[in-house]
Image (cartoon, rainbow, N blue to C red; front, side):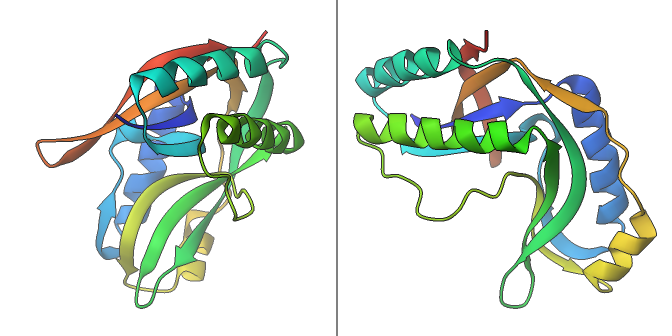
Length: 183
């Protein structure tokens, strides 16, 4: 099973992200856009895992979450990761309890390393991907000015999740397979 650990968003947050995505999409000549059900914040991409690894992941994640209080994030920014001739990733950035999020990411990375997963070499840049391989009709800075300030409510992080990622009928589908409650 191809899997990752992440934070899910509630229906209201997903709808708000979707509304912003649709506004941005109006400026696009082409691109691939994330489905509303797939908006999430990845904490650790695991790739393929076995059932025995899943049991170890569940144990490690429950241990991490038993020592972690709920925290808050807010979507506050948008940006891009550039590719050669296009925007490789169009993303939303986060504010709020970022230090807690960064510490959580490090704890998860260390715990997953003991199970056999390679630690992340790049620094953690928490973001919500809303589009990929985008070509806009004008500069991203012009679009950012046109969109203006983002207005999102607070995301109360009370659970983390293990997601299964699969391709079904030419569509990427993320399904929660385990929940880990913060205490």
